[in-house]
Amino acid sequence: MNTEHTTFAPDKRPPADGSANVLEAAGVSASYGPRTILQSLDLGVRPGEVYALLGANGAGKTTTLSLFLGFVVPDGGRVRVNGIDPVTRAGEARRQLAYIPENVAFYEQLSARENVAYLLDLAGQGAGSDRIDRALASAGLDATAFDRRVGGFSKGMRQKVAIALALAREVPALLLDEPTSGLDPQATYEFNRLLGLLREKGIATLMVTHDLLGASEVADRIGFLGAGQLEEEVAAEGAERFDVRSLHRRYAGRAA
Ligand code: ATP
Image 1 (cartoon, rainbow, N blue to C red):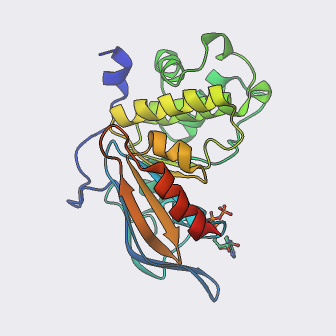
Image 2 (cartoon, protein in one colour; image 1 turned 90 degrees about the vertical axis):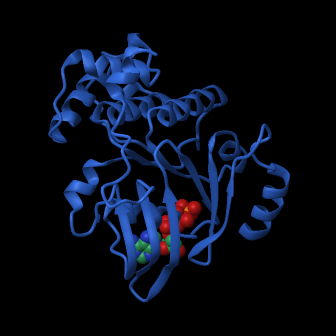
């Protein structure tokens, strides 16, 4: 066991409300004006689980992430982040979460180290340089890049900095929007390795993606969103994990 593992292990106790899920949506409906996007959505992500949420364009995947961030207020149902309601206790709920959008924004003129230090300070969780360096190393960023300006970083390197920040913040939950789109195979491989690390640390990861094959390689469960709710949910099982061909046929049929 390496030292980072113990240093960054988040609190693995179940959420205070007794739920087994760190991220939980139960019977949730949500709309934009008159347009209903989610209807009776039930979704839960447990500690140490990687959950991939798939669905056609416009199915409501990003809206689902926004629910956990408290950016979308549900019309009905229950949303909890580590037992906390993101609408009534937004600040507390967000402290439980790291959100990594498709294109991660950083202070381009600052180095990787400076970005993590500054963003940790903003989150009220200032940390010493040792801790920041350990987080960057755990996230797989090459040490030669720690002091380089983020402005010159690739998408894969930016993601590593964002994950380092999540590790340093010791959040129990991570939200990822299309994390592998635009990554080359090597960066995708490294990203998948990082998901394994997050799982080991007991972080509940909810990942929105269109990449069924990638999801089948890394996810513990895959959920298909359609008609505002989870139409199907499949758990990894055995050495093959998922029957990708059959999932693909069903997914392509739905997304068409
Ligand atoms: P994609 O795969 O294309 O990213 P998605 O599954 O993430 O899609 P959402 O972004 O959650 O889908 O959007 C669901 C629907 O809600 C879409 O039809 C979208 O146009 C609409 N929508 C999203 N955000 C808003 C908003 N702020 N106001 C009004 N409509 C919105």
